[in-house]
Image (cartoon, rainbow, N blue to C red):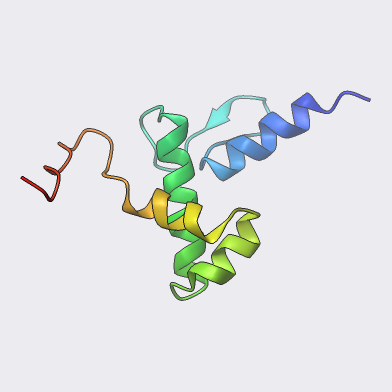
Length: 88
């Protein structure tokens, strides 16, 4: 059985958007389409907030490695200029 529709609906809910009964997309305050990396980062930060910053617990909830949580959290925000390497 193909459940692509359910996957899209679930992803939309995670991204802060959803469809109403008419099938139109509602936008819970988000006025822009975001790159997947930013949606991922925001979701990780939201989970971290819910678990009081516990990265081990957040990683378990997200089903990812703790190091991946650190990497996602420590990446610069999209659009921000990356910091110069520490050896400069």
